[in-house]
Image (cartoon, rainbow, N blue to C red; front, side, top):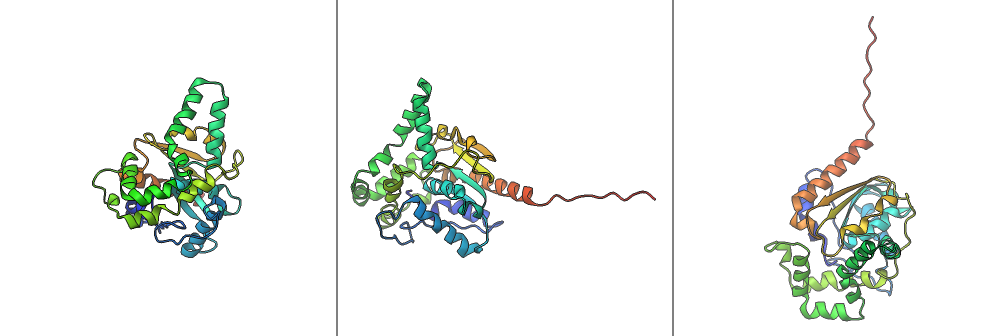
Length: 279
């Protein structure tokens, strides 16, 4: 949020030369139709959508290298930590999106520590997350995006590091509404009713955490304790803002390529060399 599949177009173009790469619009976003119902954007309702895409493009027994950003990353954490869906993933790359339950756990842990530095870090994240509370005011988010959608959308992306002149910023009011109005439900149905927190050490697949150090929405410290949950975690700091896949497209693409190649390389059986005995 507030993106569609186009946010990944640089990675789609460059990585598709070597891999089968898929990006899709979540329900109610872009070209995907909304699903009626009060809880249609609850995280547990969205996880089968990801599995359905994998089934459709790779087959029912396939596993993929999953990549997520912002709410795509939030959903990805719940997908890979789920006992059923996690088996569909060979590796997981997350950028700028925490597991909602772990986010709240981190905030409470900081506030309860009694240390001034920890309290400061927690309140800093609260300050950067002001939009979560704003979008939970009934009707406010939809009214604002209907009234000034293009301006709000472009301002948010520019604040998050998308550079002037990026064609991704060229958008009309109808397209903004297609992208934004439905997925506001993600904030309203999940932010204060988070999914179950994964148990310590329960995420055992290879995880790459790309951390934009200047992220104006998700502060780097939020992932401080992630090593307790992931047994195979690679942290990669990146001198970038929130939309790094746009502003630092080549760097993000290179990180994805190298990580997938590393995971695939380690998954192959090692060749053995037998020496002939001398006669």
